[in-house]
Image 1 (cartoon, one colour):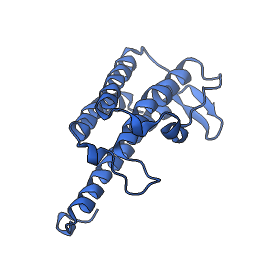
Image 2 (tube, one colour; image 1 turned 45 degrees about the horizontal axis):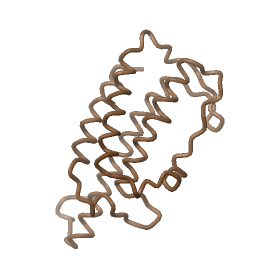
Image 3 (cartoon, helix red, strand yellow; image 1 turned 90 degrees about the vertical axis):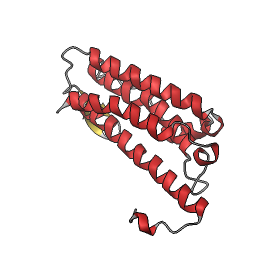
Amino acid sequence: MKTQYIIDQLLKNRNVFMGLLRNVPREVYLWKPAPEKWCILEVICHLYDEEREDFRARVKHTLETPVKLAPPIDPVAWVQERNYIEQDFGQKLEELLKEREKSVQWLQTLSSPNWGNTYHHPKLGPMTAGNFLANWLAHDYLHCRQITKLKYDYLSVSLEEDLEYAGKW
């Protein structure tokens, strides 16, 4: 596995998130395509929590104590439990960017990590530290796509313009 590539991309994605999300108007970051769907603010809060409590924590856990049960997480429930919709968008974005910087700094300090260390996930079965690392980057990409789609859909709905000329989504 090309761990340095993944770490480099995680660092670059910090700038991607900054570019996608700085100065987004309130009406855009609070807009939802349907009541049960997430808005951009909720996505940012999710990314912030996942950065700290899921991906960085799971990679660290699998590298250091793979035989112990990892602390449980519930990202879907966190949306309501942590009242994502009431959070300050600018503050959460800055917190996410700082956490990503901390994550990459930590990853870069690792000396000869055993990416093959395996944690037995209660639902998914055996997962290596390298697998958690790769999924961290994949998770970024999924949410970059989600954020872009939310912006596209908001544009389509708010302008009531035909966007067919732009190309097929």
